[in-house]
Image (tube, rainbow, N blue to C red; front, side, top):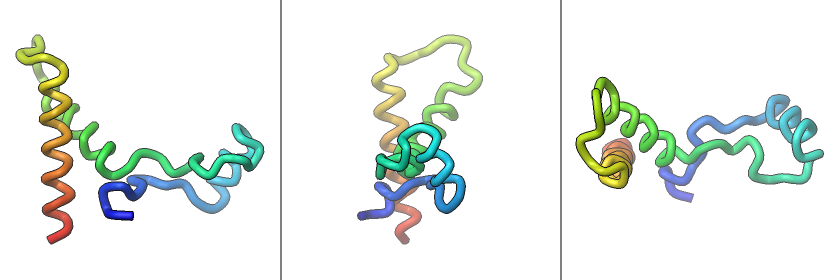
Length: 80
């Protein structure tokens, strides 16, 4: 698994067990893994791109694409 696919804020230990017991009765491997680092960084980048804007200047898809490009650049820089 490469860095961009790793969980940004995974739950482990007691917190993960509590979540499994509450929602999945211990049956789901995905519960508690959270967003990937790439998804998390893209969300933060998108938030930054949209901050303080009175109205959107571009199509939503353009903002989403830019956010993913920024996230990928952050991950690449972190590998160095």
